[in-house]
Length: 502
Image (cartoon, rainbow, N blue to C red; front, side, top):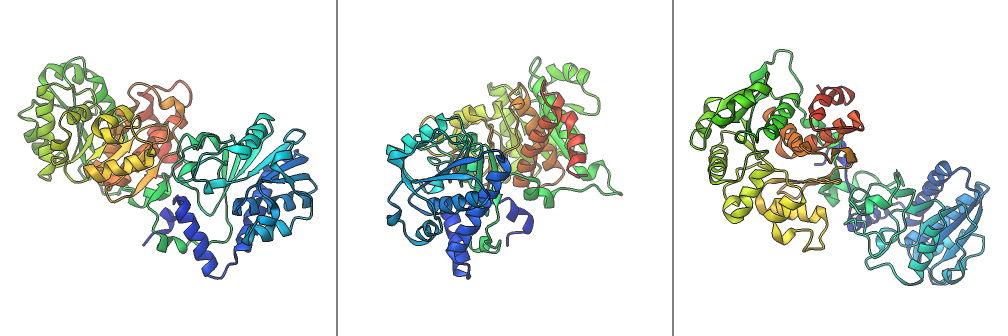
């Protein structure tokens, strides 16, 4: 059963939203009531966002999105605005609730062939919304391009026309909105690029669909937020001690390749792991020890590392940052995976570990223990899952991450401006709080360390990955411009306080 908190974070595909509408109607809410609430909600949001726009153009399509447009026009007019309406089809051809909405508009309706976008101060795009399944073309595209060319603010109903609500793809063309108003729940497109860049501010309007309809729909996609994982957050206990909070081991590379591991180690410690040890090759011991204080340093090689993990009672290992990709490092990674598979620890794999795995992908898939977390960027992801490479498939990041998790049996964190976290059981979360300042060297090492620290503390692997990605973005937001990777762990205490996480 879906809990109330995760219910708030749900994202609905086009088909799932249609099922939610249908369930509400079957439950006794007439479709025209839903349309009235949707249109009035968009009008309120539009007037609040652009209060000084006195002359509006409302562009209506052939379906329910267009029906919303007629309701919007009526409410804008009632608020004292001058409103022009144009419809893509003959208004007499409208059916169902859209035809009813047209009947409530008492002004003239022009055609797209004669519409003049110029001379208006704001424009409503109620042409297709999320219902378009083909490339935007013909007179509809021409008119929307002209609308965008006026420089007027555009208010999109549900999503800008030309956007696939489920995948976030732009189907040929979509006008860039300054405000997008959607209903009941967001869709994946509101969180995924490139569509996310076309949305402007996104506002969700309550149109009277009860949350109870979600139980039958069973959505598996969420916007990453504290609501999604707060219930699993490991609160500190007054009588607790460091051994209650887990021990994270961070595998270091050899001499002159140690910085990435230290970034991960610092992040794991700041994330709340009770103990953190850098597992260091002997030639890098002095280098690591010179830079570390609260983080311990333990000597290992490709033979001894599994015994060190066991002896130190390490319950989570991060491998990959600065590791190297030679034969010795590959053997070390095999030993770490073997120790984890025997139940000794959880595993976070990043950077060089993913490169090592890509050499023998099929063999590695059988070695990964349950609840392994992998954190690839697009390049690493393409090497690990070549049939899911963004350069060779039109599938969305959401679809690709979900397929990779199902294939590998691991939690996959596909990093980017719209990071997707996916579990083998089909759950997926899209992150939306990452600022562009995170595009800096070492940022990914810190993310992997945060996730490792949360796993060490006992969080569920999917929740730990979601929380780590969110906290990573929140730390960058809290620091602001000039961010470098070293700043991220130091911002975590401020983020914890602001989110009431203790």
